[in-house]
Amino acid sequence: MVNAFSEEGAETGADAVGGEGDPSWGTRRSPVTRRSLIGGVVGAGLLEMLSAAPSVQNEAMAADLSAGRTGRGAAGPGELSEADESILFTADAPRVFTRAQWNARAPRRPAKVIRRRPDRIVVHHTATPNSKDGSRAHAFALSRLIQDIHMDRNRWDDAGQQLTISRGGIVMEGRNRSLKSIRDGGLAIGAQVLHHNEHTIGIENEGTYMTKAVPRRLWNSLVEVCAWLCRSYDLEPSKAIVGHRDYNKTACPGDVLYARLPALRRAVAKRLDGGSPQSGNATGDEGILPILPNLDDLT
Ligand SMILES: [Zn+2]
Image (cartoon, rainbow, N blue to C red; front, side, top):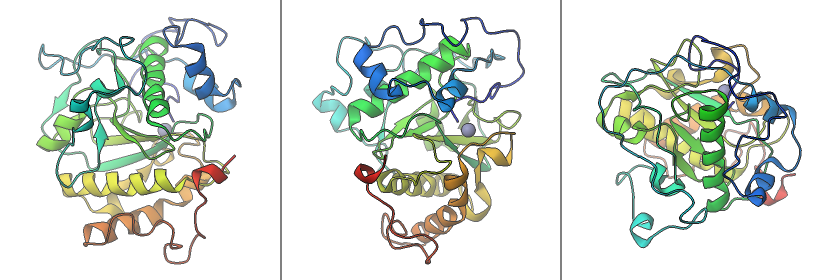
């Protein structure tokens, strides 16, 4: 999930921001955006997100901030220039929206990058409401919300996870330097799985999957992202893909999504073997699950 206590590392103090009723988080957002994300209800998942855990700060490796604030607020959520629209990470990678595109804040300091590939891909759910909004604007607002919570509440350097996928299947960079590190075969150390951040890369999947099905578009993107990571890092999907609960005491990524990890591993392996994009999504994937509902079918 977005935060189940100190996923970044050792705790260094108490909540520096305030209690759960503290209205200060996300105050830069428009009320409409916040409402659309949290649905006007502070559910258990959101409370988990808001639980604060100060962190040990990553050691800066260099002075350059690869993705500083680009004037958040100057453009509305989801407003992209033509240049932005043309950005593709690599030819055979999924479309990943950059931090500049979702208008990330500058991190407190650059992520620590190690020149070593991760050996596990950690699947999370955000434990936020199962929004029906598959838009880019919603996805970008989600990324900003997560970053705000991680930086303002948890006092982390930046968003904890390296990658984020919205319910609509929109893939976004999380922690700064993540995309460059993937391309270079290294790891921008995140804050997403306590005690295991130095050998794992984390994907936050929007929603709460304790009982609800995973939207097809999210699933398709998750398969593509995992295939991309396995290809980039030369990982074997059957071993590399794990759930957050495999490492920490947490319900994340939810019972339903966790139960789908074997299917995810198979779908990714098939993709790496040359299977067509988005194979194994709506075909029952070896008969284990029926056709997944459309996003619009979900409540
Ligand atoms: Zn998690």
